[in-house]
Length: 285
Ligand code: PEP
Ligand code: MN
Image (tube, rainbow, N blue to C red; front, side, top):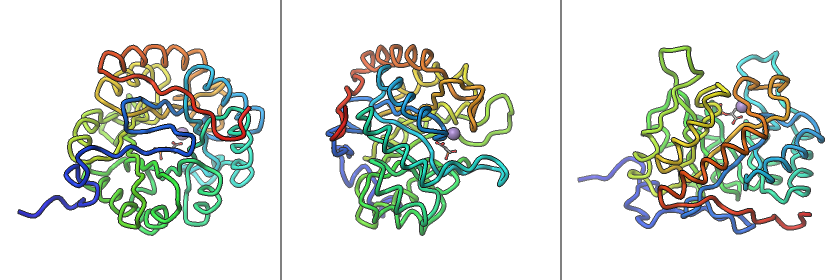
């Protein structure tokens, strides 16, 4: 009998599971649950540095923030680009948090991989084979979001593109798929979490911000994600969510994020895990 199409990602290829280790020692895919949080988009220095300190204070162990933004409309805010990466580097130095940020295309991959601790490949790019291959050669762990119309098989085969270039450090991220309703922005597929953990050895995290598109649903779905076995969470936090330049409706305030982390800590313990503790990156205050 031939094995699954995702031969490198297959659980059988590494039954003990992959643990992605960042330079600061933070492990993703081990016993600890890793909380990644920050703004949807980097909007300015005070914003991203302030949020980095706020989310660290509340228990985040990775800072997120988009410099290159994949927007549905070409007229919408596209992110600060290279300047955004510079501001993320500042926030990283000030907070000691490692950074995850998106590479939108092969042109942005180089600068992103140079600055970031984890390179994010977004839902819209999950089918971009040449970008995936390049990410497989970029020398950084890759956070691979599920395309919003991708089957689990297509998602795992996308991971296979990265793995097959020699990069073993792939983190899968469930962020919701398109469904028929309009009550939530996407349908967060939490069954994918235990399923993917069965099928592959790769860590899997959940993004309940994009997965629901609604601020009031982020905290309960974050709890549910950890209960389902997620190795981490990716969350959008903003100081003044209604004024956010992108994804305002799903962004939560730092106070709500603090509540979320406290609750998720309890859920993690209930399922035999614990939240990761901060490990400052080099040169941090
Ligand atoms: C994001 O994380 O900011 C993002 C654009 O996510 P996705 O690719 O899942 O839409
Ligand atoms: Mn967003």
